[in-house]
Length: 317
Image (cartoon, rainbow, N blue to C red; front, side, top):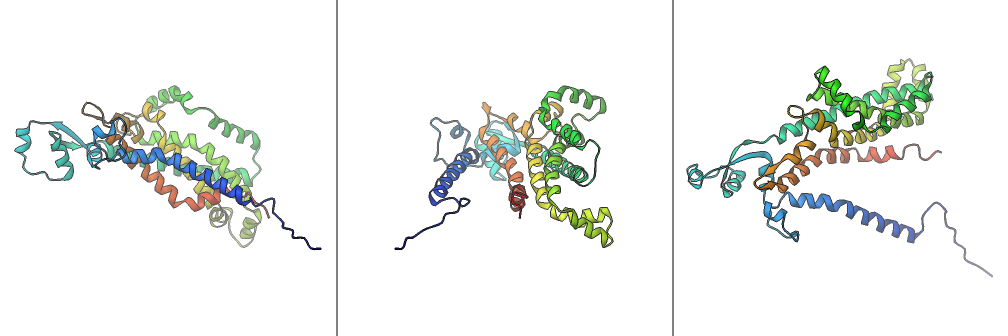
């Protein structure tokens, strides 16, 4: 008598479970991508097509939204427009078709540049300070370390907007209102707690023996940290940088309250794009599409480190 037996691992999912999981992931990905795809499509619609009902899925693409985003326009008489001669660019041609002329550049690029400077500057400071603090908590005996870590974490639990008025008054007295430096310091203060807690977990996973061996070979503590610990903590630093950058890049409340001109970022500026007869939805969609590009590129470039960083230390041998 012979019987066929098959062993199934309790860890590996079954074929049906894999199919169900795959379907769920695909459906979830499609649902999350629909708003982004709709924004991208709207950026190439004309203003009438963008507000048509029912919504148009098939339309004639146009660059009017991007032209309206990057330029300011004024209405002129047909006689004046004809006296200008032939259009000098695609945007000029589109604008004249609306009986308007380009008066100059818009403020989108300066606001976009402010977002780049403030978001990446605060992310660098938050990760830099968080790395040093996490290394200190992980490697040295800090008095009341648990209490200090809980205090650092508690600052993240509090809604940042709850302290908006005190921060506004303080910034007004210090002259930091509507300055890039003030926004960088503020976003750094908000993000450093997240950076400390994330990076401390990564630091704890790096064996101390590596540093001890390096110091026996003649390295100083700082050299061992720079040449031994940092290379192994790259995945954690990359993951932390992405989370900090996403917060600073998308932050809206403080940007509205503390900036109005010189240091205003793109999130509060995009909703103010007003076109003829109301909101210029193609221009708003174009500004949103361009605003998504840096954070998307940054995440794609660090995607391997992000995936490794999220699962770092999950499996012990």
